[in-house]
Image (cartoon, rainbow, N blue to C red; front, side):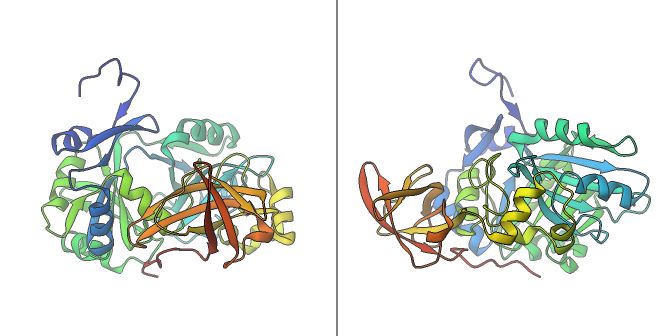
Length: 378
């Protein structure tokens, strides 16, 4: 793809030319040229994913391995960076966690998978956010002991197949995926290429994330799309799907000042780590786990049809108590939905709030998350 002065600093995924050729509206996102929507539009793409199987290009995400001669050495090295219990992962199991800083804020969130491949017993596969990945790699490498190495994987793309038809579609091509449980993975050879397949995703639906060699990803993408149950989906619907699912997005519900506990992610910190600590920011995070945070991410439902966007002020009894971190229209909900970081004392579902939208007061309520029930296969 030829670069122009406006795009010369952007990067392109191996599927970028395909997106452009099929009518996608391309936008800059996390340093990449990415499809925000295809001709059908965001609402149609959102609805199709909830009803069938949406295919997403997420090749902008960072993929890497941390490895040593044995699992305990690798796990202990990662546990010095994240608050999750990595040591007790089973082969093929995936765990969601966060890279925390010394103050207990979040540098990034990530997925960690223990390799199940013979000969790779000391390997962990990481997937990190696109906008943070260069810093993440520097941070991880700088804190690993000499027995542990970081290997950034530049030769692979990443696609996500999400929705209730995903298992049938992918299972027709690769039967082994039918037996995968949620948050587990498998390595397979398909048409002579190695694929790493995780039963996970970012939509609240059942589905898979598939790491594919750059040289094979266009052919694999088109093979999936040859099934009538699959359509390509852009970043616009990806965001509305994750918002309805109540899933945190880095740079919104998570940042260097927001702790995992404030983000409502205490479930991602297992019992052993709560007892032992030993991760960056443990003093603050363990205190928040014990006493409760002073502020927390919660679901907020504006009344009426008008969406309220990120940074909207949240008021209670005439006082500013927080701000929205994400907001928009929820096609499956049929109305506006939002996430907000507010004072914890007001975060009980049913609490009446006021949002300040374009200088006007908009009534809203705190609601339980997710807005749309998760449909993971556990």
